[in-house]
Length: 256
Image 1 (cartoon, rainbow, N blue to C red):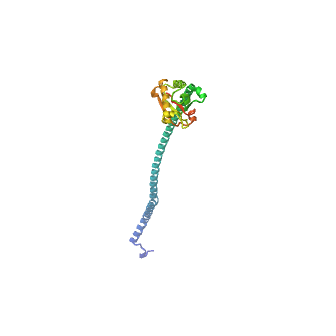
Image 2: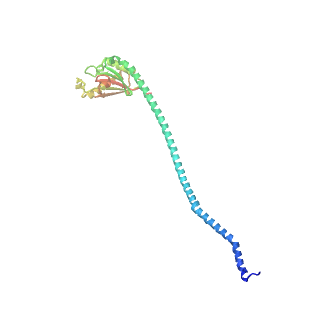
Image 3: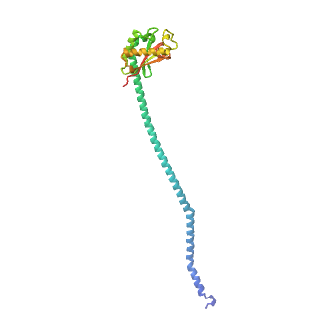
């Protein structure tokens, strides 16, 4: 049976159809590839880039924190060194304080021992409350009431006082510095000495000078070791251990 002419395919149409059928898979492949590229770009733009930015930001913050930690560690190390130095200085200072305290205690004990030795020279007067021994700071003080030291209404030493003063001087360390302190008071009754001395201050100074001369000329104490002092007001009897007026000899330990 024959075909109608119009049923015969046009060679050009047939070729076009063949060409389209051959190119169809390639075209869809390109579309898929394009979609993948667009999707990949979108993914990179939407996720990877922000992720990298966030990573860079975190890295920067981490570096800042690391630097801050390093600074804090350095500061802590410095503070620890300062604390150790302070503790070391405190320990050294405490050792010096303890050493000084022990030295002071030993010195006070030695002074008291010396006081006891010297006070034995005036034991008879201490029993009658006419003499006393005490510690005045870093000095030993030997006090005698003026009625034991001086004749009535005069600045002349009694014979007994001359002997006692030399006994006291002999018990004092050879290189110790002495202070002769004559103490008067406002309650001291006027006497014939008032006409000879213009004031109680001058009288007190004269009494100290007389005792100092006795120690120097008759007791063998060098002038350079004696300092006479006249006090107008010297406190009360509790300060000196005897009634006022009085004369005291004060001395410290010999220099080592």
